[in-house]
Length: 155
Image (tube, rainbow, N blue to C red):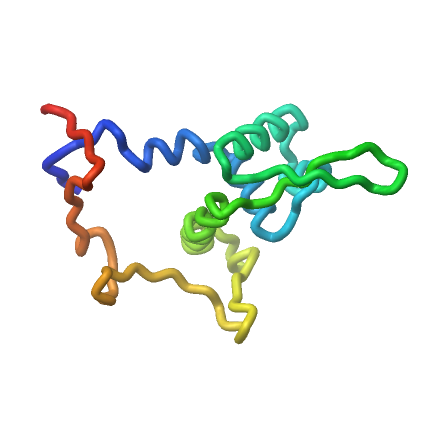
């Protein structure tokens, strides 16, 4: 992509600063299927305890997860981690990564997980459309322009 400008406040870079790490994506993967408790997140991701604790703290600090206290009978109070709206808005990103991995990295037997629409059972697909409703097939059909918040770098 030959872009005639460069911004020094890139949204991709800022997003990767928050979520661009393996354990973060695995925590989010589990949160999207309803895993909420530390021990369960650790078991499902395989993350070392200290790493998971740091990732959860960062996701809470960034507003992608919120803590909600709970107490099992006879136990001390603990926290569950629940997705916020900001966190849920990352779902299309995770699905896109999964679909890419299914296409290029899956075993010969096929994808390990299929996402289907709860209402009808059909597989989930992702599509790009412009505001006028036209299907956009790929990057060659997109023109990047400076946005209203662009801070352009001088060449």
